[in-house]
Image (cartoon, rainbow, N blue to C red):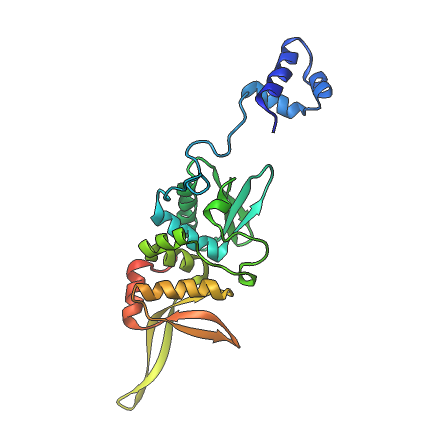
Length: 258
């Protein structure tokens, strides 16, 4: 990124009658950059507005902890943070096209987390990546690191755990929106000598990471939801919520995807 003095010098050469091509050759600056400076001289600040609450000398509280708890769940499920240019990072959260309401909710949570950074939706096969660039995503999500989440340790920082403790349902909802589903299960039983079929709703959460499943199940326990672990082969990838009272709690606070 060119500093303000460099920009002024390039525009001064233009004012002296040099062409954009000539100024570009003299300075080594692209003509596209010089043209953009004629419209806007000041550099765009990708982190303008409110500073990051976590990387100041004395970290402050997250302004909207409820929205952050939901976004944290989405990030742990289907999110990733990647280094871009000049110290900026991209946050991307994959959201299936089948759930447009979820995509909107995700975009709104990202916007609340960094209100002065743009949020865009990048279409891919069967999904959209809700994406935003900021220097501070690793500050807000210290679980960021190289490799897949299920291959490394995932532990919440104390300040994150405090937010989850205060807003457990939003955290559960974010995790469920990433890696969960609500289905109608069925079974049969004998009633007065006749076999009858009956149906009941059930919630599932699937994730390869032992740590992320533990965060989900521990939070379920704190809100009074009973759960069981179901193995996929020899791997306990699935958490099931099937008891009527617990399903009713999930319906009241989470509900199916939309």
